Amino acid sequence: PDIAKLITDLPKAELHLHIEGTLEPQMMFALARRNKIDIPFRSVEEVHAAYNFTNLQDFLNIYYMAANVLVEEEDFRDLAVAYFDRAAADNVVHAEIFFDPQTHTDRGIPFDVVINGLLAGMKEAREKHRITSKLILCFLRHLDEDAAFQTFRMAEPWFDRIVGVGLDSSEVGYPPSKFARVFAAAGKARLKRVAHAGEEGPPEYVHQALDLLHIDRLDHGNRALEDTELTTRLAREAMTLTVCPLSNHKLQVVNDLHNHPIDRMLARGLRATINSDDPAYFGGYIGDNYRAVAKARNLSREACVTLARNSFLGSFLDDQEITPHL
Ligand code: HPA
Ligand code: ZN
Image 1 (tube, protein in one colour):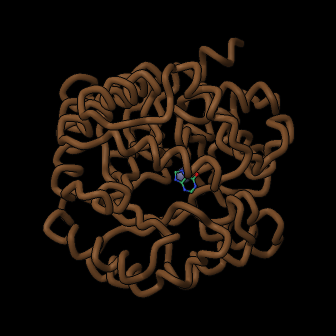
Image 2 (spheres, helix red, strand yellow):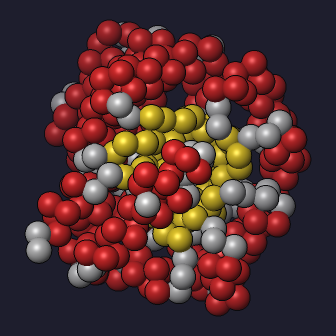
C-alpha cells in the first residue's frame, strides 16, 4: 500500500534529463573554484534564492550562466557521475541524457572535451551501478540553423556514440520548422529525433515537430492537450511524451501540481513518462517527480507501474533489452 516505496522500487528509464541541469550548487562552487570562474553567488543559500524563476527564459538565463563553470573533461565526467549516483538511488536502470554542446563550444570549450567527459561518466556508471545510458545531442533553438548545422558537422565523428538529436532552449518564437533541414540530415544519418514542443509553445509547434522534424519522441508536449485531434493522433501513433512534473510546476506550465495533467494524459491513451528535466533547478530527481505527482493527483499503483513501463517502451533500447522490463 505504500506508494512511495513502490515508486522507489520500480525500475525506471529516464528519458528527459539535461545533464547541465544536474549541476548542484555545491558542485557549481567547487568547479568555479577549481577553474577560477566568477559566479554571481557567495553561498548555496544565495543560489537557491536566485532560483525564483517562474518561466522558461528566466530559468534558462541562470542555467546557461551556471554552465560556465564546466571547463575540463573531468568536470563533465564528475557532473555525469554525480547524476548517475543519484539516479541509481531511484532505481534508474537506463538513462537517455541530453547535452547542449553549443552552450560549451560557444565559449571555447572543444566539443571533444564535453563528449569525452560525458562518455567517461557514462562508462563509470555502467561499471559502478550497471546503469546503461545513451546521449542525445540537443540544438539550441534560439540560435540559427547554420549554428545547428555546424554543431551537427562537429559531432559527425561521434555519431556512433550518440543515439539521436534533440531541440531545446527558448521555445516561443523559435518554431521547430527552423530546424527541419538539420533534422532531415540527422534522420539520414540514422539518428533518432526528439524535440521539446508544447511546453510553453502552442499545439502548432507539436504539429511541426511531428510533420517537419519527424520526431520519434516528444519532450513535454503538455499543450498538445489543447488540441483534441492532435491528442488523438499522438495516442494513435503511440508517441512517447517525456513529461516533467516538477519542471512544469516550477516554470508555471501548470499553475499547481494538483492540476497536473499526467492522469488525463494516460486516460487519453498517451504514452506518458515521468522525468526530472533539470533536477538541480526544479527541486527533485526522478523519484521526487513520481512521488510528488502521485500524491498531488492521487495516482493508483497501476498508474505508477504504467508510467515506469512506458519509460522502457519509449526508450531507444532494442526490443530484447526492453522485454525484461515489461
Ligand atoms: N525546456 C527547454 N529547454 C531546456 C529545458 C526545458 O525544460 N531544460 C533545459 N533546457
Ligand atoms: Zn527539457
